[in-house]
Length: 107
Image (cartoon, rainbow, N blue to C red; front, side):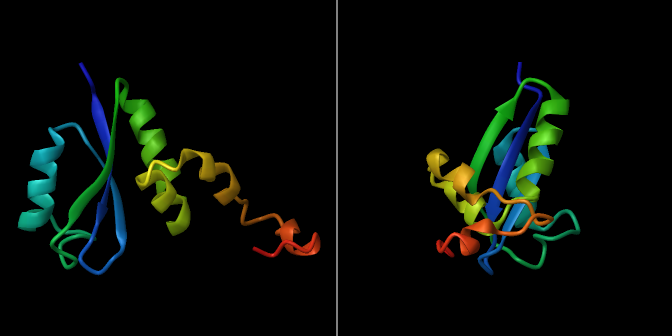
């Protein structure tokens, strides 16, 4: 039995919300759209489910949710579009300089 689902919602304002649930994803999506819980999505309804993945262990799901929340918008959109091959190129460390500019590839 799966323990938790990590999901990404696209909000009405175009922003993304990443969450985690132990209940069926359809139920959680309904709660977001009904505005039952206060939080990020309440004023950004309606929301649309654009990505979900299930995990057998809650600790794995928590780690994955935290990982995705730290990603850039572009990286989240690559994940949503299943462009997994693009994910490494979209990774960067904010504490290190972007050497692509130094190499003449400032893309």
